[in-house]
Amino acid sequence: SGAMDFSPVWPNQMMPLVMVAMPQDPEPQAQQAQQAQAASDASSSVAAPFAPGQLERVTTSTASESSWASAASSRWTSRDCDWTNKQLMKPDCPQRRELLRQVIQDSWNLANSKNGTRLVQTALDVADYQEKQLLASSFQGRVWVALKSPHANHVLQKIVALMPPEKMQFVIDELAGRVAEAARHPFGCRVLERLLEHCSSEQNESILREVVSDVVELSKHAYGNYVVQHLLEHGSQQQRHQLLQQLICEAKRLARHKVASHVIESALVHAAHEDRHQLKAALAESVEALQSLSASNYGSFVVKEMKKR
Image (cartoon, rainbow, N blue to C red; front, side, top):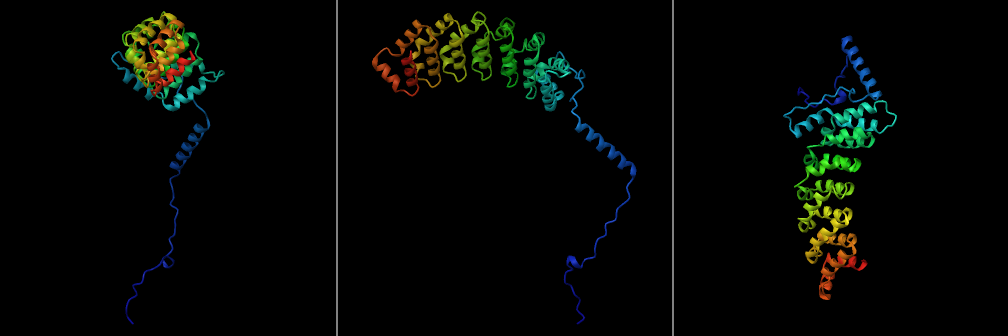
C-alpha cells in the first residue's frame, strides 16, 4: 500500500562516520614535546626539594607561635622533610652540613609540624655537640608550648635525653610551679619522666616538692601516676622516703584504686627496707584488713607484691 515505513533504523543500517584528521599548528606541538621532555628529565633525577641556603626564615617580633609554625609548614612540605631526613641519615652525604644548618634554622617551626618533628629528631641524632646546643636553644622560653604540642613534645624529650643534664636546667626552671599540671597532661608527663631519668636528683628536687604536695591525687590520675612511679624508681633514697611518708597515710585506700594501686606496687618494689616495712604494716594492720585487700579487684595485686617482699 502507500503507507510510509516508520520502523527504526538500526546501527548496521546507519551511514558510516568518517574520521577526518584536522591539521594542527606545529608550534604548540613542539612546545608540548619540550614540556614532556622536561617533565621526564625532572622525574628521572633525584633533585633536592629546595636549594640549600634559599629557605627564608619568616619571623617577626609580633608573630605568634602558631603563625610561626604555620609559616614553616608552608615552606617545608612532606616531600622536603622526607628527602632531607633520608639525606641526613647518609654519613657520606655531601650536603649534610648544609642541610643540618637549614634544619637548625627552622628547628622550632619544624618541631611543631607533623612532617618536621621526625626530621628534627634525626638532626639531633646526627648533629655534633655544638649543633645539638643550637637546636636545644630554640626551645628556651618555649618549654610549656612544646610540652603541650603533639609534635614538639617528642623533640623536647629527645633533647632532654641527649644533652648533658646541666644544659637542661632551663626546662626544669620553666616548669616551676606547673609540675602538677604538666604531670596530668598526656605529653607533659612524658617530658617529666625524661627529666627524672636523665637529670640529677639535685636538679629534680623542685619537681619532687611539687609532686609530694599533690602525690595522693596524682597517684590516682591516669597520667600523673606515671610521674610518681618514675620518682620512686629514679629518685634518691631521701626523695623516695618523702614520697613514701605521704603514700603510707592513704595506702589502704590507694591500694584498692584502679590506677593508684600501681603506685603502691611500685613503692613496694623501690622503697628502702624501713619504708617498705612501714608501708606493709599500713596495708595489713590486721588479718581482716589483709583478707579484705586480697578480695578486692586491684588490691589483690598489691598483696601479691607484698608477699614477694
